[in-house]
Image 1 (tube, helix red, strand yellow):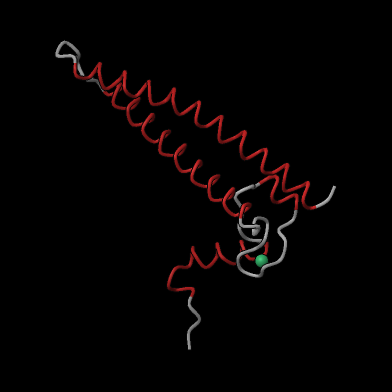
Image 2 (cartoon, protein in one colour):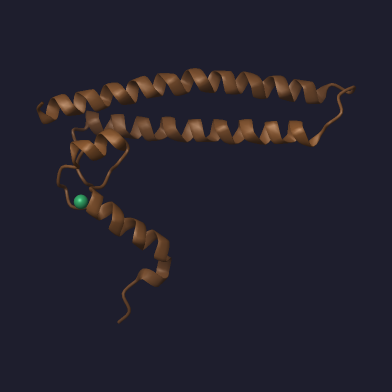
Length: 128
Ligand SMILES: [Zn+2]
């Protein structure tokens, strides 16, 4: 398979995933709304369980929103023709890596270097 076909397949995976998330997140939103309405009921006694459900649903929606943003960014990179190129070294990110991690913007080597830099924070700066 050519590189272009590989990218087309990754695009399909991303678009399918985007639709799935949007469908799921509509359900999450409905659950959260129902929960909030229940909480407004004066007869309703707030308990730890519903607070937990509230928190779980909220963080779920946050995670879904973040993933859609990552997908949109990846699709934009595809439109610009830079998808699959490492932002650091400009080389092609391997097909295997893109299939496993369609949001990857760095090749394996640079991703590892970047992670170490992030983890180290300012201390990772080379000392003079
Ligand atoms: Zn690279």
